[in-house]
Length: 72
View (cartoon, rainbow, N blue to C red):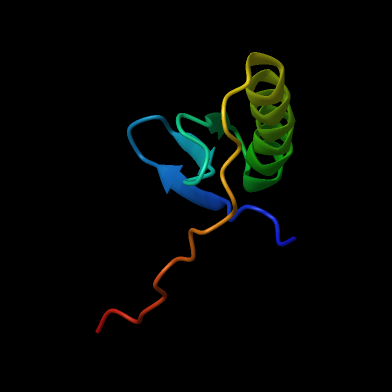
């Protein structure tokens, strides 16, 4: 099984990095650096999956794949 895609981007408004997992509803975190955001979102993913399993909520299959393109 492949793993979930993680987006990490800088937010000017929050003055830090946001990491989210699009396939897991509301699984998003803030970090002062990309490395911190990645660590935090990995912890959030584990908690999300555990909570879903314990509550009987369906665990989605990883599907999201970003469209990567160049802006000119």
